[in-house]
Image 1 (cartoon, rainbow, N blue to C red):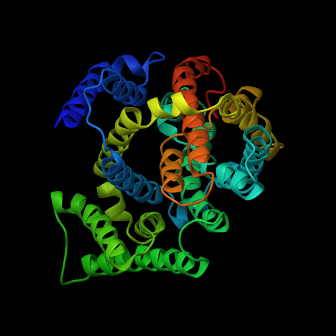
Image 2 (cartoon, rainbow, N blue to C red; image 1 turned 45 degrees about the vertical axis):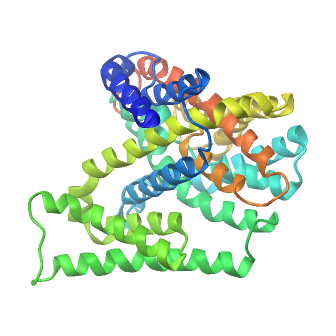
Length: 384
């Protein structure tokens, strides 16, 4: 009950300052993180948070991957793919490798676990660069690049995280993990296809508010079937979102606004419990190499690697700088870190500390600079 009260207060505070946050360095997402840290600091939250954190993080990531998948239907990927394709197919692997090198030499991780660290930190989260991806004064091609990149890279990173987790000695054999991944893809594609075909047939139709609930029902069914069949929840979520976007444009449009609100609410709840239960512990036990790694991962790796991926694309200098800087680590990385923490690999705790610190540094720095840089774009490159 205390936790729910704290979240309600944080939510109300975020609502009240949301207009101010749009034009200042304040971030509503960081409000939830900070409120979580605050209530833990004053000692009003009970112990044994593991199940709460795990459940909220699981539902939140499922919701985010489902709605992200809806942003990237196959038809969408065929249009204006050039810049996001460079960022995903070249920039993301370069960022992964650069992060892995930093993890190996700074934190002392073995190479396989270093690459696992790189994979977990490779997704980006647009909520911590909301002014950049949402304001019309920012060039459209830059907004499109960052939005599409962040909408896809968490789904792309997940299989890599799972494979490297098995290679690092995580729980379960490779064959079992592969079966869960394959089953997740099957569930994520089959259920939306069947549901949408039924809804589009002459025997059934959704009207009014039930059109919005169609997407919610698909997501809930995918979630529960994945739990029952032990399919990979998160791959099923992303596959389901892409399937809806590709085969049910009307359902996608009807669900879009409602789905975004639901996913955002779960994401903020996850950030709140992350700040409440995990950040204080991480900051007290992490050694100085982890702090150095976190700074390098945020301040050095992407700013050096993404310009290589975007070379020759015709972006202006300011767009290059903004695209290279705004690769905020965020929610997906934290949840992938929790998946790693729950495994039995030898350096699970050290990996989670590195991920959590890098994500926290990124959340604060990127959410504090997006408004400033968005304002700088006003009047520049207006038609691009």
